[in-house]
Structures are given as structure tokens and as C-alpha cells.
Image 1 (cartoon, rainbow, N blue to C red):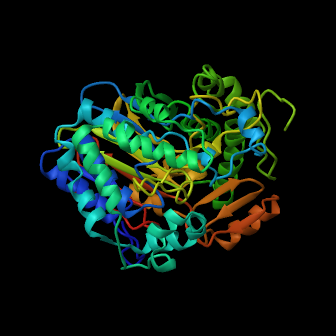
Image 2: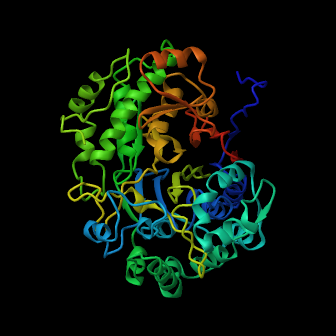
Image 3: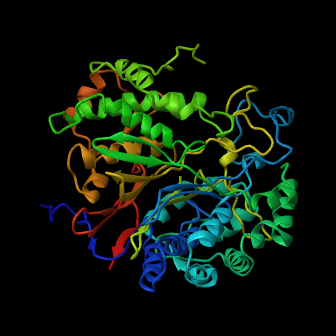
Length: 529
């Protein structure tokens, strides 16, 4: 029974359709489209367009997108909407420009060609029912006339303000009067509204061709970038459908997008955890410890091996094999924290998510991101496009699977998911929070399936995340668990900001009722009818 004194929201229920996002205006826009008979794809596009305006430090039309689409009758398919490096980008060229082994967030070389608009248009062409002009109406109105800044967006905006301070054009838009907007302030992005009008009229060509593409390329070149109009033209068709990957956990199948996304890491963590009893008898400290140790192993393999799918064709099958999972699970010591190691013992050397189920029963798991808060911090003054920083995920090490190369896609942190039971999709879900996402998928699903928590309850549980040499924990982790974890060697770091966010819509067997969840760490909500 829900604790109505907890200050946590109960999960909403609906009979016909539902959408969950991390911003109330985005949820409202998607709900409006569903109510008008639009498809899950229509609703997601309407919602993400709004969020690109009203949550500009988390997402934008200058970012990338991944999706899992589960039609009512048909197999689940994955959409890769990640952009590529410019054709002139090589390790040698960037090294000659003075870069080290990685690409700084605010460098023009961190800007890959945006893939989001290509993905939106591919989704809409294949599964949309209402015109883009209708889907973008709310977003255009907010961009041109202004919108109220919500509390969580305001908090994050202030925290990330330094990213845009160094770019006069970005600062002019995002630091009006020299300071970040506060909760309740009005903010507008009229040039983003103009871009959405172009895309509504011309499709992807309105973004990747003509004057808009030429202006974006010219501005990046003025910053020292290698981008050309031809790179943007090629980006128009960047998004492509592919087969999802999946693994079994707790009597369900978990579907993810294949590399270059880190969905395989979420599956690897779950596969490792499946070797342990994760039920209600496990203590809080043991549960956090197991999750931390499995996460360290999963992310260590991600950083060493994951890249553009053309660079790691057999990686998924290898990492998810029983041989590898058994070997990695055997490395975990319940009494102490250990450094991660690769299974074959070689020498050691931010985002928005939308979950939708429509009246026809089609489900969409959809994620759109500019990577870091405010992405690269670089804004094109003539188009209003804030560019992502996905190229910062590339390595500048010759021979590394994720080394930058012409037209190559970088490793991606954003991962939509779909939970399946007996071959039937039962829940599109996702977790935001940059690096946390793969670990977050595992923690959320374990709470749902191992502990029997409800959707909202599983989201609201205190979070932890093993990254680098620390174990981040939220304040809700008990003092007893903290002491036990420190005794095992974990270096705890209590977070002053929430770890990640999440959304989901669960389809209940038998009744078909929809149960929504939208993380209380964000401003958003789930809404259905």
C-alpha cells in the first residue's frame, strides 16, 4: 500500500494511453497528441520537441537520439540516431591541433554531426500519423513566446552555467542579464522555433541542407572545427533501423539498442547480478555492494571495448556469453571492494527520456541528448542550435576501438529499454543521468523484478553508483549500510544532487491497464487517459 505520508507521488493508472517524461510541459504536449488520436511516435516527437526548448541544458535539436519501437503486432526494432565525426577528423589531425588522449567538452572537435533530427524524421516517416507542423506547435509556441523555467531545470541550469560562460553566443541565450534564469522566470529561444518551422516544412532537409547547414558548418569552422556542409548533408540519412539486443533477467527479457550505445553494459550488469540471490533477504549494504561491483566490471569493459558497431561486430555475443558472465561474477568478493579487471586479463591500462504507449498498444522507448549539461557549450548565433558534445567520448589513441576517425560514431551513454514477458512487450523504460544509465537500468529492474516494487516505488528508491574510485550514494542510504560499505573498502561520496532520473509505462497483464512512473528527482510526470 502506498505511504501517503511519504511526500512521494503514487503511480498514475490509465486504461488507454500514457506518456511519461521528465518535464510537465513535455508530458502535456505528448498527452495532447495521444488524446487527438496520435501514435506513440507522434506523442514522443511532440514531447521531445517541447523538451528541446524548455530543458535546453539536457537536450536539443543539436543532439542525438536512440529509440526502441514495439508495434502492437510485430517485432521490436531499434533506431540508431547517433551522429558521426566529420570526414576530416582523425587522431593525427586532432593530436596536431594540440589535444591529448581525449577531446575536451567545449572543444569544437567534441561536436559530432547531430543525429536527432534525422531520427525524428525517420520515425515520423515510418510510424507517424499527424503532420510535423501539428506535432511541433507547442514547442514552437514556447520557443517564440517563452516558457516558465521549472525548479529542477533551474537548479541544473545554475550548476552548469560555467559551460556556456565561455561562449558569447551561448551566454547571450542562456545567461540573460549575465545570470541563469531562476525557477518561475520566463525564457525563450525564438531561433529554435524557426528551425522547427523549417523542419516541419522540409523534413530533415530543412536542418541538414541549405542555409541552415551551411551556417552551422561555417560557425564550427570559425571555432577551429573540421565540419563541412557536406558532413551535415550526409547527416540527413544518418538514422537507421537495426535489430535490438536482449538478455534474460528474472523471468523477463530486457531489450536494448546494440552498440555504439551502452545497452550491452546494462545487460552485462544484469547478467552478472543474475548469478546472485537478489531477493528480499539481501541486506541493503549487500545489494549496493553487488550492484557496485557488477557496475565496475561492466563499465571497465565498456571503456576498453565499446565503439561504433563496425569496430566491434562480435562484442555483444562475447560479453553476454555464459563463459564471460560466470568468470566476471566469480570475481566479486562480498567482503571487500575490488578493482575491476577485463575478463581475458589484458594488461590494465546529462539527457532526457520519454516512455509512451498509445491507444493501439504500440510502445516507444525514446531518448534524446546533448551529452553533458549544455552539450559543448557552443551555440551557432545564426541558427540558434546548441551543439552536443558527443565527440568528447572519442579516444585519441591509435588502435583503440573508440578512437576518432572520419565518419565514425562515438560510444554513447544514452540507452532506451523495453521489458518483455513471454514475448510480449510490457514496459518501455529508461534512465537518465549520463554515465549512470546502464547501472540505473539494472538497479531499477532489480527493484521491480527482485523486490516486487511498483514502477514509481522502484524509481524513488535511494540510488548508488560506482564510478571511478568512489561509490556515489544518495542521502537516503542508511547509516548502517554506509558503515558496512566503508568497512569493505568503498570510498563513499554522498551526493548533493540526485543521481539520474527515469520514466516508464508498464502494461499490466490481464487488465491491460497502464501504470506510469516519472522520477520525483525531476520536474516531470506520467499522464494517461
